[in-house]
Amino acid sequence: MAGSDLFTGTLDVLILKAVSWGPRHGYAIGRWIRETTADVLTVQEGALYPALHRLERKGLLAEEWGLTDTGRQAKYYRLTPAGRAHLRAELARWQRFQHAVSTALGTV
Amino acid sequence: MAGSDLFTGTLDVLILKAVSWGPRHGYAIGRWIRETTADVLTVQEGALYPALHRLERKGLLAEEWGLTDTGRQAKYYRLTPAGRAHLRAELARWQRFQHAVSTALGTV
DNA sequence: CCGTATACCTATGCCAGCGAGGTATTCGCC
DNA sequence: GGCGAATACCTCGCTGGCATAGGTATACGG
Image (cartoon, rainbow over all chains, first blue to last red; front, side):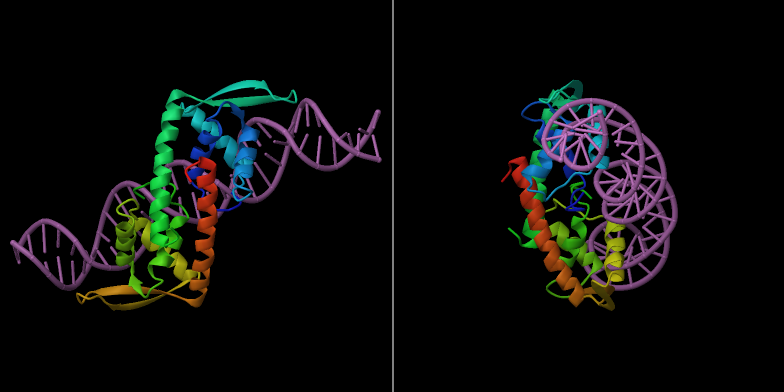
């Protein structure tokens, strides 16, 4: 991505979080990540769409075509029960990881 | 690594930090990472040594053979001036990244 | 004297993300 | 009416980091 590196493995949990309040389509998920991180993280489309398909194949996301506010076709993704459980676990994992690294780097 | 994923790109800055107080040899760097993170992060040797060589090639680390406390041969790595500057930059980058992700995930 | 810990190395393969392409629709503007 | 920008989707090829799984050699404890 833009902030480059440090990103591997974080994309999945960010995507899951993006749809945790309700269905969102791919493009909007990318925008959400960029906006909530104030442009620190910019997901490339070449990373985003493959990631969505991956998560769908794993049964963590379910997809469904729908219409946007502006009347455009878009593929909406929502969390499956397994996805929600996975999100919970990944959030815990991120916190452990983040705390461990920050401690080691002295950036607590 | 053990904590798996989330790790890519973090290894370099952890290594640089490990030698920021003085020269350390490779094996000790791996041990330091494992210990200061309370086993959350375990660096595989197949990742560690290539990373050290990479950083050396980039001019961020300098290597020199020496003896351990127990009288064993070991290759000691120390920060070059460029390495120290790089470490400073990477620490800032980590903080930006970490803050961005934590905000997005709501784990602040 | 034999296993364990220390200390180094590399070759293979996987796979996530990047870069770079492509298609189609809608909107705003002139 | 036309045209560029934004929206919304996709895939292919490449790179490069990390895991796996091997290998060597020395020191130490029992």
